[in-house]
Length: 379
Ligand SMILES: Cc1ncc(COP(=O)(O)O)c(C=O)c1O
Image 1 (cartoon, rainbow, N blue to C red):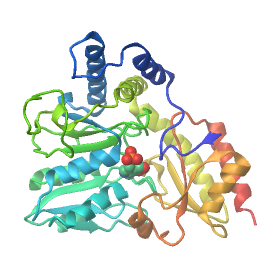
Image 2: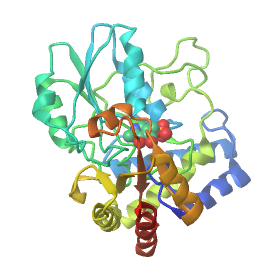
Image 3: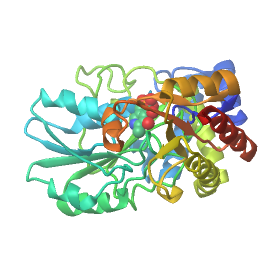
Image 4: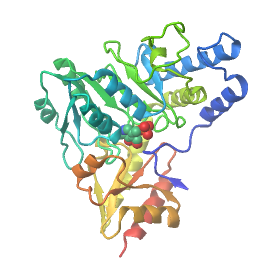
């Protein structure tokens, strides 16, 4: 299959990552931080190495501030519910995934007020419009780094600077950007960074992380065994253990550490350059087809490796189905868990088809995808 659904999860995965997971499960997978025997200790050490690798990728100086989670959704829930309290105001954007919007909606029941800033038709955000929404009780700005619907990159550097100047916490959803475009939490002034292991970082499903800067006080999302302070009934608030209650996904985290090390070796900038080249070719070809409408920015430097489109006379699910059945091409058709983003770009009634590239895609595959869409859109 020609896999162009990397926005959902990346495929294939690096061999070194898979080997590390197998090795862990086959040779030493004791419960980390629980027992003092060799296997448990070795698992703990390997998890620590994974934390260091993630820290290196995102310029996180204290990797103890990285909390491992099972996906971006859990990381976003932890960050959002961990800092917001009754009477707080939060600002977000209309290009968010439901993993941001639904926890915020739920927080309304706890007396938290949300403002959603409307983005432009190509998904871009005007920071001035966001600035106007800041109030005395604004505690948090949370936004996606790049839209999963159009790939549009939001101006996180400017938002981070604004948030810092106003004393507001800044949380970034890096689901579509981690491993695809460089992220430096210091430079971007990010207080909390939520991301998946299974997308651009090329790790396994069931992995994710939340970075919390040392200036942020956060409540845990769950309480339970941490392997520390076991005689106390109160949940320890120590980083990271206090926020990782229960047995962690050790093989997954260790695999993720290996895929991050692989990405560091290649360089995120190089991945970005290659994906941009593939995306530009695909984007340009689709925009030139008579019966195809492509959404999002024209300039591929302003988006990640996502090309989202519709064929005038066909439903998005049908196009996606034909790509799969007739051409062995994996795409995603529908609403991409982001209804407001579809409202923003004008596809709320129709949904859209998304092709999303990854570092393992080839130019030949892109050519084949272009030919397939060309054949499908012909009347
Ligand atoms: C922008 C964005 N945020 C959050 C998520 C949720 O990620 P996960 O499936 O890792 O929970 C996704 C998933 O596609 C996404 O694209």
